[in-house]
Image (cartoon, rainbow, N blue to C red; front, side, top):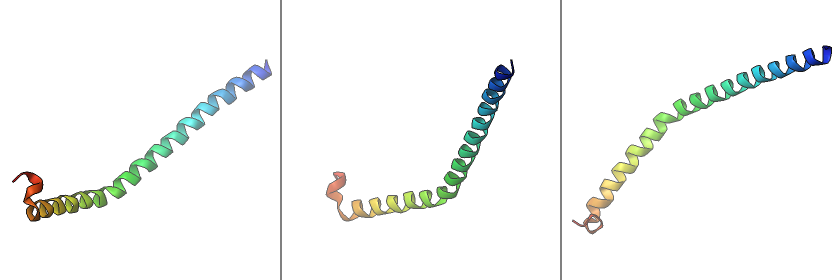
Length: 64
């Protein structure tokens, strides 16, 4: 009986531990995404500006 109780206790504690680890990992992932967002938005704006400049300098690229 003691083995059964110990097994069930460890089983339940394992799931609680994994839930906590996964929750922490997801929280850190979201924090990393939030930290990188301004840089990604800026890179997107720079790329769009470079594309416009390239098309203006080479109108044959845009069939115009």
